[in-house]
Length: 507
Ligand code: XMP
Image 1 (cartoon, rainbow, N blue to C red):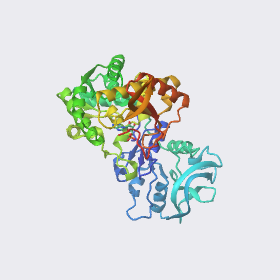
Image 2: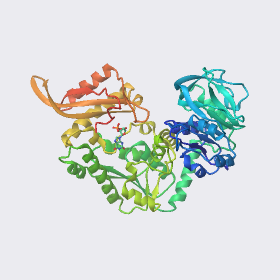
Image 3: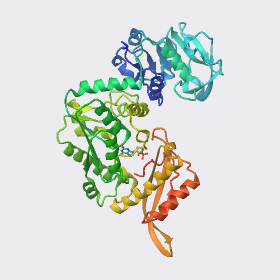
Image 4: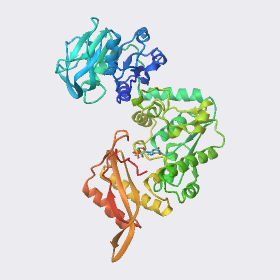
């Protein structure tokens, strides 16, 4: 085992900071994100990467770093964009606003062939820039190791293993960026490895130590994170109760399918059918926020009632939930407002009674972990499904009839997406009810029925989304089947709104 802590990525607020962590992990080394004032919490990192950020180092109160402490670590350092500007000023140089704002592609031209950071890099390759500052005066001790096509310095060497780059190696638009990161990591001695199979063993050991004989209660939904969590706890042979609350807002046959899925995985679960309770609490409510509040509050009540006595609560919280949004300069110890953080859970957490074994993993890493745990692919690659369920796809009042329409429409849409191979190509897809009746003709009769809206989106992280360009034939076929077999519907629409300004869900 390495004596070093993970490679520390210090986040100065760049939208790409998390991506640096992911790239380093993809290269097989463990990396973690820290806020600018958390350098002392990094332990003995194998290397330090200073991220980019939206500020200018010349601004008053710009995020700073303790250079003496950084030096005392005695490890390689890479400053990216803001990180490079900061290192430059710390070494006695200065920054100036760039003549041209440099956003987008540029050309990396290394100064020579002997700089270890650029080993194996082409004489000219595309890089991605996103900044408006550039280095001004350079101190004598600093060497220019690469320029761009305008002869502007884009990479500096501050010491044998201290570098700065004015481009983003972590984005795929920097064609050889991964090689630059690989070269940097190669300079880090004894960096802890990141490999999911051994990480699984490490997690299981950690869980056993933390649980220490107590009984664990874990909420499951059939989604990726809670399923991986439950199977992991099971694999760790922890005494566990997995509770699945049916709030009556699930999709067609979903409760039965989740129970069957867990049976197959060898994890016993307790199904709590609270659908009546939720539907009656929602009766007459049509305000989206009010509906969410009712569902969220009742969910916690029902869960805690079913759990009765919780010694230890396990949650499938992931790393992106734990790190504060990058734009505000993240501090890994802070938690953004999240449904896993309601008061009763926070109370348990204060008492050291919350277990979050996946909190160091990104979604794709959770899927890899799931694969090593033997969880079938269709479970690991299911579309996300919101906590409030079909409620956010049923604007206006929620009634059993309306939910039935959504369930039937959704089942048809999902089946046809899977049969046509489109399910895996979209981030999320669903059928929503539009609570408006319109006139139509069915047989020889006038009909006056609801419209439904199909939505399928392409997204990376649900923050932004494009509507999926599904083939007309597929849309036509789904529409036909819904119109012919779902009672109460005489119109099918396809939602072609991007997010923003629309959101992915209707509410
Ligand atoms: P929006 O509609 O905000 O959705 O564009 C973005 C992503 O979040 C999911 N979503 C939720 N997930 N609880 C959840 O667990 C919620 O209350 C919730 N609301 C939206 C949504 O399905 C999409 O993937």
